[in-house]
Length: 164
Image (cartoon, rainbow, N blue to C red; front, top):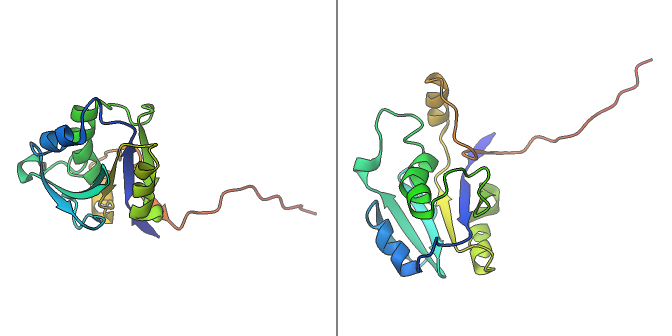
């Protein structure tokens, strides 16, 4: 079993232009344009597809909580430093402006949702590591919603067996 990334797509830029969003991101992230799709290489990196272009976002080190197993998860840092303050999304379970893309669909799946016009921006996350999952469990915490995507998926269904 493997834990894959569980990525995010957002329907709008919350009243911002792409240029305004990039300027605001620079407060919490180092933003670097990329000619290729960006697959995050660490828990502090994110890929972002915006206005037909990929960017690498690297969170500023002072924003990474060292002793908080939930706070240092890639999704928690993205939520606290980008999704909540810039997009006003406080409950990803119910907000219709956010959707989730399992890692099995790859970066092309993120790009396709934005290119279709259905979504405005996509974020690729580094997969939750087993050590981080265990640290949250050991601390008695609960993983944030939609923070892990497991492969292979177990088959669902019901089996009937006649007993004689």
